[in-house]
Image: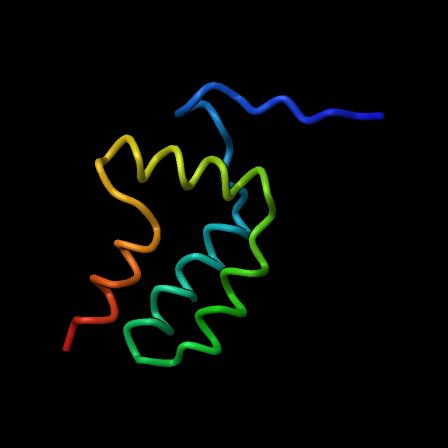
Length: 74
């Protein structure tokens, strides 16, 4: 059985596809299009998710906080 060992925080790789999906999710959230935002987030691979989470955490935030902030923008 293969076991995934997470990379140390801050060393993960975000794929170009995942970066594009995250951008699309943030854009959709800003428009108030929650279904499109959710679909884009669900398309992100697990390793990229971990890297995104690590980077946001290093900046003192989280993805839910970021989405909430984006969703409040006029």
